[in-house]
Amino acid sequence: MLLKDKEKATYKEDRTSEKPIRSVVKSLSWRTIGTIDTILISWIITGKLDLAFSIGGIELITKMVLYFFHERVWNSIKWGK
Image (cartoon, rainbow, N blue to C red):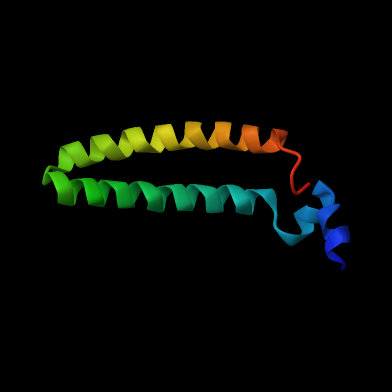
């Protein structure tokens, strides 16, 4: 398949390479790893586990919101489509 053809793949064709539920699970697992990393770093820096979990909880929400808006902005950019 040529690169040009691959760029024009439809959602239905893309589903055959990776099912949407797989993408959702991968996203959740990656976000979990990222939040655990933030909690560990926060714990190491502050020495307080409760504060580390607070930072990790806030980071979980803010990064999901930021990612949503990041995606919306990129969807409006025509470059590379």
